[in-house]
Length: 350
Image (cartoon, rainbow, N blue to C red; front, side, top):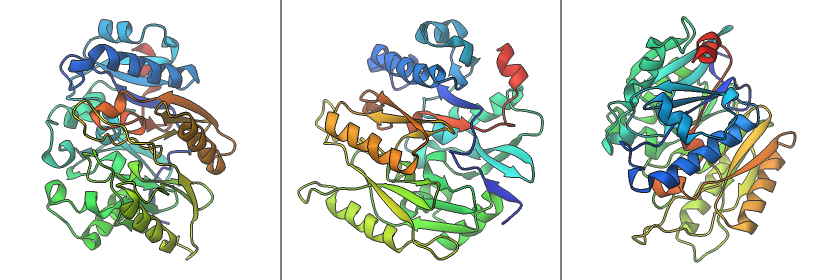
């Protein structure tokens, strides 16, 4: 194994990074509803005893939005940002030897689709405010990489999609071979699994892996399935499943596949389908925060299937019908931070 590796999401978690919806963001048209959504989300995470580092345009605003949450587990950091999807502009955590680092990759609004000038500076702002531990921050912004576009098993394997990483609007349309080298150098990837199929209607990310498939301990991959032949996603998700059966780990062994249900179709006020997915959950060492969509049977089955891969975890359902109105879900709105990245003295003082 290389001397650098990407830390698997389930390994450790000292905190979770979030950004609050505010009048300057795309949430403004349903701001009260969005504030309630983030109060539920931050409340669930902080209520489980997990520290939240929450970006807010002003401290008083953050205190008002998060009123009633376990504020002893929340650090408010005043910052400028375009929007709230911290998964894609927050730091990607690696370990080199015994030293943990938060890598600050470039973010360009999912291939120049949306404004991202402030989002792209959030990690540098956290560094300047001493939120990162000394030496933990590393500038990698010459390369565009969103946290939702990669999955790691913590042992040198990266799972991603060709649709996203090979996008010409991110890094000039680099080939898989070129990207294998970059992911190896910067993330310690020794084995890259390229998923070529699967996409959700309404997804702005060019098929982020965290909308489709997730890695888990025990040589396991959870994936979004579809059993309804009349469903618009049936063919692409069937091809994705077939490709997953062909994937092998570094020892040449097939993966254990766990199928998640596809939520029933949800549409916005214009009749456009929204990208609801159960794959967009957040894993911590003790809890899984699971998006639900007001669909009793599907929500229950999704939670049961996640427990197959994480039998020792407590699954915490969080209703995310508001989050998907801006084409994201729970995992998109959060970024886990392992031990040794954030400065605990500063976060406690803030």
